[in-house]
Image (cartoon, rainbow, N blue to C red; front, side, top):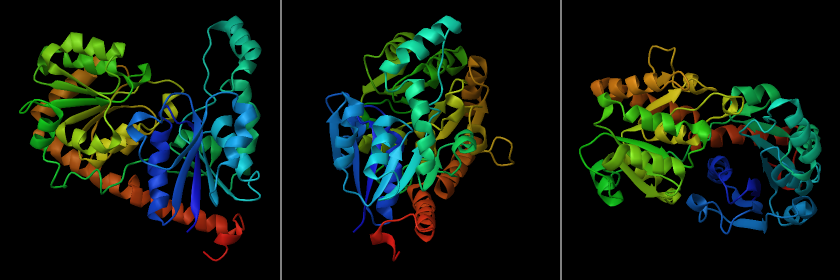
Length: 393
């Protein structure tokens, strides 16, 4: 049975979040899967550490170890995730630069994004010191022309599609795992299992609270006197300063759960009511589609998202049947008012959540992505971009 080798940038961090549903999609097509990458920490990223066959090398001397990592791949198809040397660079070598094995390329973020404070900082950080780090702009620009060697490209957003071409794949979860109709996902039972209170509206933030994710906006919105009925559940690094801020600001209304394995995600989402995704707007987030948004859609949760990247379109903001609520980025007042509106309009919230689930099934589920990837692979085969085993597909 054919195998697909996924190369992921740093397996101790969250790039596996995008690769995971893509790998599940190709498994649904009958392929075996292995995941390869450098590892900066002691283990693979905690929520996903037991989900695949992993092959790793320590995150050091990356450039000199690219060939070693590439040599560990046994797949017939090579899938490089992110245009970085430690992932796509290794995938290039493993595929013989696309000549020996079918090479696919996936992009989820704007990796060419960089920031600086004035000309002096740009020269010092990016032109002088930049050569020291493989994640610097110079090294990324050196790799960028080689992205054209892939047989096909998949991207997460329209902005990335304009740069790289290819097909948009929304990295949603397995629709049979995150399914609100599962009999074992009773909200009351799931709350009891997770130690969450019954009979209160629960808001969820899951993941690492990077500044662009807008967690501080969520906390400040829930401090509004109109929203004191809400409680906040936090899944992620319990000792993070943003989590500590939330606990201090909300007191008994804040419930810090720590890291949960990915297999607990269905129960966690079943237990909560609202999943806000108030992304801050910058050049980086304009290319992003948060996985947590798609997971919330899968579980038919109430979603509030900011008008960043493709989120408004995904939630059908300008349609007659919206699938969630959309607010301006960085607007605490608008987010607070929307929390209040959700609480006062339970029937409308339910309708929008059900539409979100239907959209997810059609456009972002593992089954939907399996169908897209099947067409992509067949197209590559028909064009001759294939290995010998695939010639008869």
